[in-house]
Amino acid sequence: MKYDFLFVGAGLFNATVANEAKKFGKKCLVIEKRNHLAGNIYTENIEGINFHKYGAHIFHTDSKEVWDYVNQFAEFNRYTNSPVANYKNQLYNLPFNMNTFNKIWPDVITPEQAKKRIAEQASVMAGKTPQNLEEQAVSLVGRDIYERLIKGYTEKQWGRKCTELPATIIKRLPVRLIFDNNYFNDKYQGIPMGGYTQIVEKMFEGCDIQLETDFFYDKEKWLSLADKVVYTGTIDRFFDYSEGELEYRSLRFESEILDCENFQGNAVVNYTEAEIPYTRIIEHKHFEFGTQPKTIITREYPATWKQGDEPYYAINDQRNTELYAKYKNLAAAQDKVVFGGRLGMYRYFDMDDTVAEALALSKNLLS
Image (cartoon, rainbow, N blue to C red; front, side):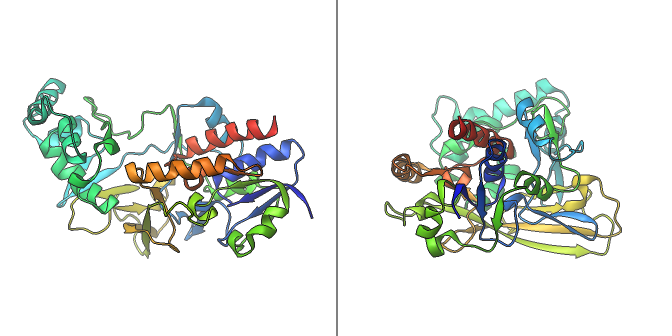
């Protein structure tokens, strides 16, 4: 059978394009190597709790167009992301705000005092151009905040010393001189009641779907089945690593069902000291204000990526950026295949960015 569109990957990006294609009467085929739809935003119900299998995903956006779009498929709750940092059994509010500053410096009571203390500590970088992430962080928030809440967490996340990471990773850090623990500044924020999987399922309704199907086992066959292919896998693998291998960071998850109502009192607690190997613990029920008798927690461990592992984050340093540019040129020469999503476009996307990029591509493909 011939299709108008083949979608390689069943995550949010392809779901959005497929939903738009169906409005034009296009016949769509979706193939996915996992045994479920929804990619990394997949949720499943365990013990009455919507369990985020691949880590926390909080929808937030300033775009009313994007917000209205996703609200077609589910009702969102009023969840506000207010993570807590645990450093040596001391708890600090994130993002950095007056609650954080007073906890670190008990004599700092007013915004003016906080601003002055940060400036005093950042003054060691006065007149200097930061050469690495450590210097950039100190120039923005000072030594105390950097040591407690940035250094260990960042080195675990990237698998490198902060002195070896480019300053561009943190061009800015959120500093709020108010008592506000809302992590995002976006106007719209929430979690879909009932989980994310339902959204993707509704977007793909009417498409032919084949799960547990690896595109690369018979690449030429799949390419021949459609007039247009939207590919959201790793771009370097599509081209058989002809220009070299891009680098990614991976994640490993350890989850437990606990026979207690409330493990940590918050959906997300970051562990910022280097000695603790995981970066955060997620308690899933708190995303939807759950009152179930049990709870589920997930510890998130950053990991070095190798072929065969799940790639989560592009490493956008100079070497990889230059390498991706070569693959982008190869992609531009393709007539049938377009590349999308965080792996196909080799950059980090929040969910709202994913939807916005997919809608833009849809307009281009379907105009």
